[in-house]
Image (tube, rainbow, N blue to C red; front, top):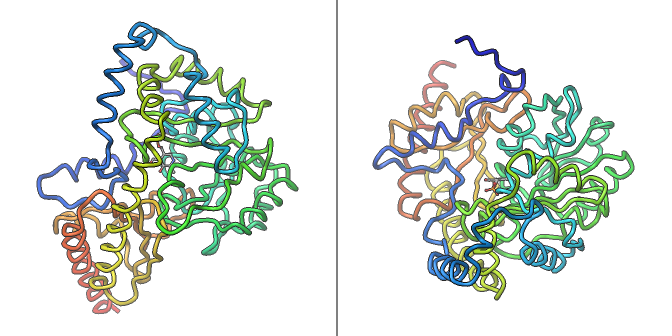
Length: 395
Ligand SMILES: Cc1ncc(COP(=O)(O)O)c(C=O)c1O
């Protein structure tokens, strides 16, 4: 049979990260590639008890089809939790999604037509590029500095359907947007009539101080906010949420109904049981402490082992270091050598919608214990030093 694929299917590509993750399953491989939370942080006991309670108290409701908007008490909880962060929304504006990845997919379907300009950071989250790409947008990369995207760069995106922004501990760069820059970006977006899609799965994983108020808290009805339980509880639950202005919520809901009717009600009830008594307030600080120690271990290892000319900035939260190799080195080309040396990373090229900066790469500091971070970064240091040496020989 000769299958004729839809045009949008041509735009679906294997995720480079998922391909690399297959390599990392090889025994002994030190993976600094995947964005996997440390599995020791999963609150297994709390989830076990909550599952038992749900099955004992409301087994038939939990196993029945459920509302597309999500489980009411969980929506209320999300609205209250966001209000504590300065984002005031009614529970009726909360849509529970099957991971925030689904939120991105729904946003794409509802807002992007073929050829629509869509403003994105550069680099940006690969999964968002993948979710939006089948809708055939014209990506407009935003120029940025260490503080985040430049407000004036939004002007080049005038008329865009949305600006996709990651204000906290960005995946992949680890960079956060400061308080003043948030105000400037929102003011400029509002002046241009440009809707903001704010993706915030890492905001709770701060090490020194909580991040400034979300963009959506400053943008009233001009922003869609995406959140997730993946990094504070466990990604296998596949639970995320979005908060949308009333003008666009019904369409997102209809797109959700078309996609999967609803997010598993059983999981939603389990998560509600877990969070309702304040487990996150006790649990998340333990994740922060563990990740902070691992961030420090990677920072020390980078300082010790990477050859001169490599640069990185130290993330104040989240899960990633973003490394720039000396000009002339290509992180994609060097990956097979790193894998042969027993360590994997994600080449930065994957995170660009335009011509990539080939000498960049992303390292996750949370999945591996400090000793393995040390061994892995030392191996990377040797691979990069050798490549640098070879480059100088040629020159
Ligand atoms: C920036 C960003 N957005 C969204 C997601 C998707 O998360 P989930 O679908 O597990 O909520 C991720 C996952 O790593 C991410 O890094």
